[in-house]
Image (cartoon, rainbow, N blue to C red):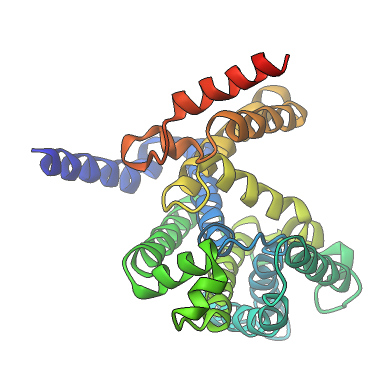
Length: 323
C-alpha cells in the first residue's frame, strides 16, 4: 500500500506541476520558475560540495559562462537561435572546468575553497573589461514574453539534473567512489580508486549543469551583466540552500532552494528589499548547524542519520554544565 500511495502522490505532484502555468497566474509561475532554477543550481553545487566533500566557492563561474555563451551568440554578428547556443555554453564550461579542476582539486579544505573563489572573481573582473561581454553595461537578448516557455524549460532542466544526480550519485559505482573519497580519500586510493579522475569528472559534471541553468536564465531575463551572472552572492545562495536543505543528500538541495527562494520573494513583495531575508538566513544557518546538522531533509525519517532530539538535548546539557 505504501508504494501505491507514493505513486499517487507523485502523479498528483506531476499533474500540478504541468498545469501550474494555466491556473496560477504570471506571478506564481515566475516564482515557480525561480524555484526550479535554484533547485537545479543547488543540486549542481552539491555534487562537488556534498558528495565529494570539496567546498567550491567558484560555482558561479560556470553559471556565468553558460549565460554569456547564450547572450553573445544570440546577438550580432552571430544571431544564433537559443537551442544552438546551449551546447556551446555546456562545452565551454566543460573545457574550463577540466582545465581549472585538474590543478585545483589537488588542493584540500580552505585552499581549494580559496582557489575556486579566486577563479570566479578573476572571471568576473575579466567580464567587466571585455567588449564581447558588453563590459559593465552588459548584454541584451531578444525578448520573448512567454513565462510558460521558461517555466517548462527550467522544470525540464531541474528534472534532468536530479535524474542525472540520482542515477550517477545514488545508483552507480561513480557515486560510491565519490562518497568514498569524501569520507577518506587516502583509504579510497588504497582500494584502487583513481580519486583524481573521479574528482575532475564530478567537477566537470557540476559545471555543465550550472551552465545549462545559466543559458536558460540569460534568455529568461533578456539582460545580463557581470553582477547578475558572475556575482559571488549566487554561489553563496547555492551553498546556503544546500546546507539548509541537507548537504550530501539528493533532495536536500531542492528543499532548501524551495523554502529560501520562496521566503526571499515573499519578503521582497511585502517589504521591497531583502534586508530581513539576510537576517533570516543567518538565523536559519545557526539553527541548522546547532540542531539539524544534516539539514531539514533529516526531519524525514528515511533521511535521519542520527537522533536529532538526543543531539539537541545533549548540546543543551553541555551548555548547562559549562554555565
